[in-house]
Each structure stands twice: as structure tokens, then as C-alpha cells.
Length: 232
Image (cartoon, rainbow, N blue to C red; front, side, top):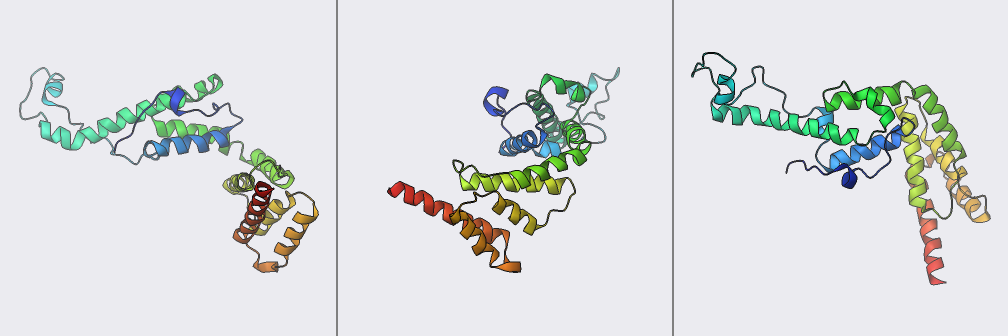
């Protein structure tokens, strides 16, 4: 099954990259590319051009003043060795156009001279992630310790957001032990008697407490509360 392409309007429905939202944009973009079999063109996991590109006989003959019939690639050779490369080139170029459509005008200058999708992706990564890593990790750590769960938000969504913050911290090259992350999640819960008891129950496991145990407990309590509300 080959890659499929759609217009920007019906494929990339997330916020354009402005320079302040790289993490969200890059995750959504990667998911969109993977879903359409296009991520391989970022990873360059596709056929590379042959050392002497094979052209159909007519095309190659046109490049010489005197055509040598023995010097032209056979059509079957072109199909066997060349088509994958030219198809990949087409998909690479097309996907570049789709991604450019998700960039704010302020970002166009950063990629205007680039010729491959990988170059474009690497340039945006270098610009918005590598050069700002030290500053970004400060804000991620600050947010993860000060995040509070809104009880109108699904517990699974809240935990998912916390896990995303943890991953951003790790991606910045900063260690963030599991027990610190568990504490950050528990601190984010309301300071009511119910959640106080949940915290005490989890902490009673001592050094055996794991993230999976924590997530399982919080999800179970939340689901139980939701079921009770439905029965009221």
C-alpha cells in the first residue's frame, strides 16, 4: 500500500508551527506522516538514487548529440532500479509542500533553501529544540510540578499530559526519576480527603511503588466515581 496525499485543509488540522509550539506540532506532524506512510521520507528509509541514474532510452538519448543504442538503459532496468527512487523523490517533494502548509509565515525563511524533507525536519528540530533545550527544560519542570488536575478533565487525559511533559524533560537530556514523576502526579490531585487517602494508600507501598501501580489506582478511583455519578 503506497502513501496517500490529501490537501492541507483536510489532513493537517492542527495549529501551525509558530516557533512557540514545536513540541505539540512535531508530535502531531509525526503522527500524521506515520498514518499516511510518509514518515519514512523523514527517516530517509527509502531507495537512494543509483550512481548513474537510469533513464528511459528516449530521455537518455536526448542528452547526447549522437545516441549510442548500447548506452541506453533498458526499460526493464529503469523499472527495476529507477522507479522506486523517482517515486520516493516525488513523495518527498510532495510531503515537503504539505509540511510547508503547516508552517506559519514566520517560519518559511528557515526552510526555503532546503531540498529534502529530512533537511527540513532536521532544520526545524535544530532551531526549535536543540538551541532552546536548556530554556525549555526549565519550563517543563516548572509545569510538571505546578500542574493541577481539573476534575472536568478525564483522568486518562491528565495523566497523558503529565507523561508528555515527562518525555519532554527526558528528551532535553535531563534525568527525571520515576519516583519524582509519581510524586508530581500525586501532587497534582485535589487536596480532598478522598485523594489524600489515595495518596496515603499508594505511599504505603514504599520503595515498591511503581508508575503503573499509580496510574492503575488513579484510573480505578476515577472510573468508580464516574460510575457512581451515572447511577445517581
